[in-house]
Length: 289
Image (cartoon, rainbow, N blue to C red; front, side):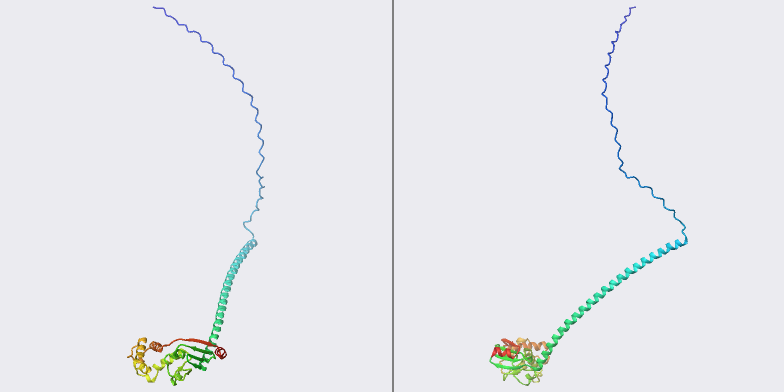
């Protein structure tokens, strides 16, 4: 048996000593925190306790409370009635004012209408007086006619032709018939009328209301009316009026009458001249002396 060898372990070297830790510097002490001043207001003192309510007041107190309620209710009702009365009164005032304004407007209109009626009445009276007085021929000269109207004014007609100057579109001869029509005068042969309407009306009556023309046709009546005129006179009137010559005079309408008068006036070469008017004889004499 072999001899065992024992291995010797060397000793462990000593651990070096740990150096000492350096001491920390001393920290100064923290100063104390100053106290925070109070910012809140002090609480108010507690309210005094309410007196105890008597849940069963005496009869007099209950009557008094009930009376106050009744009075308050009455005051409210009275106030409501007062407001309603005021509104109603205000509405009545508005209606009265509107009625008053309407009445004043109607009265004003009546005043205006009355003034206009008075003016028209005066004009109608003056016109009626002029008709009663009638127009009179003041002067007749070649190409001149002076007529005095019923209201005292004068009218001078210059130039034109005789049917225009005499307001005689049909050149009716003066006589009883033209006098009944209200002729103002004559130049010794032809009738002179104060207005053209008078002359046209007389011409219409002369043809359609003249006993000498009763039962005649239009063509026969025109031949009798224009005796001495050429045949073209009758033909021209029929053409201008657009009326049938074979129709009897009694069968024509009022419009047909006017159309015939227009045609005769045209056939007589109705030519307009110049008119001068004067308010009275002095004004006429001053300019025509």
